Length: 119
Image (spheres, rainbow, N blue to C red):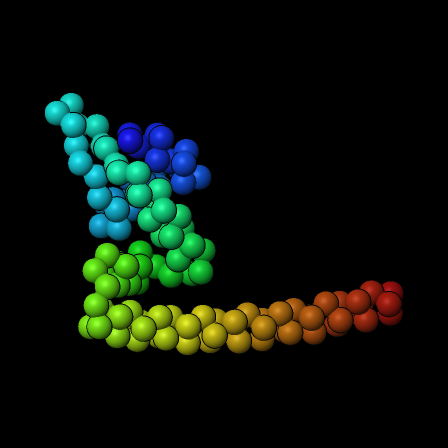
């Protein structure tokens, strides 16, 4: 299938697909005129990549996890598990930081409301 059809099936932009290919997350074959062609199973891969991006993973991290998807093996699985644990820890730290920021904003909101009450 061509790039527009894959974009439509996977619910992403053509620009995203080109970016995924530049990052090495997605591959295509080229016609003699240079048009990209993808296999039918590429739409599932794109949706998987989208889920990983939505979870906050970078393209570099996704690239490190894809060997486990593409060529499952004991070594690939161990490496992917380690990388996912690192990402989970990073996300947990980020959640803690966000909660602290939210709490600080709550304090500022309360102070601003108290000030307005005095006026």
